[in-house]
Amino acid sequence: MWNNETKKGVFFNFILSILLTAAFFTIVGLLFRFTYGVIDDPCIETMLSGAYTGTPDANVVYIKYPLALLLTALYSINEAVNWHFYFLVGCFALCVLLVNFRICSNVRKLFNKFIFMILFMLMFLLCLAKLFTTAHYSMCAAVLTGTAIFYFLTIKYESTKWNLALNYIVSLLLLYLGYCLRARTMFMLMPIAFVAFLYKFFKEKPAFQKKNIIRWIIFPIVLFLGVGAIELVHSSAYKSDSWKAFLKFNDARTTIYDFYGLPEYEGNEEIYNSVGVDKTRQYMYEQY
Image (cartoon, rainbow, N blue to C red; front, side, top):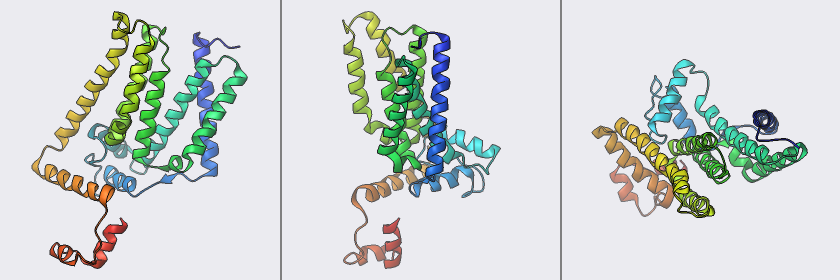
């Protein structure tokens, strides 16, 4: 039996989680080749690194500006390192580490800690093997958001104020990272997050006790304030008329590619020719 409540117990659980997570990623790295999943991320990487424009550029549209600014700063320090790729893989590793740490913190027997963590990592690999080893910012945003929901759900009500604050900070940072990587993906998981919040709130009796309200309501308030701050910074980076025009065009392009697809060239020759697109170029656009 191991006392998870003492400082030594917390430290031991954290070190054990790091070691097993590191071993897991080492084995996966030897068995599989980590790479990008789709063309989106290499394009983002070329803009962040400066390979496309000549200097690192945080205006990559798809990633929120505060996170993109941090990544461009890393590229400015060492452009030879693919920071965007390692950041995505690092986010996956962080999520696995946090879940392992939560498992360790709730299981007392050392043998059981190993068993539950290994079972979790095997399940994670079996369910997400392809998506996990082919890094994609949308998938990474989904895993970050899912981990944040799990971390929030497993907060103990009897936690001290400092412990509760620490758990809130971890959950909020994961949500902010998910929002910065792909806001649309994070919003897709918000219904699940809302149900999780209601479950957590009404689980405590009486639910509308002053202490309970203050304890749980503060989380969504801070979340919305943080998202608002991120969006404010992001919007200020794209406030020029030229950027607004491009974003409007890009939204239309994304809608066509993601939801409708390009119309066939045959039967629509007049439309394509009017915008200077021949059959070869239409085929190229379609394959992209």
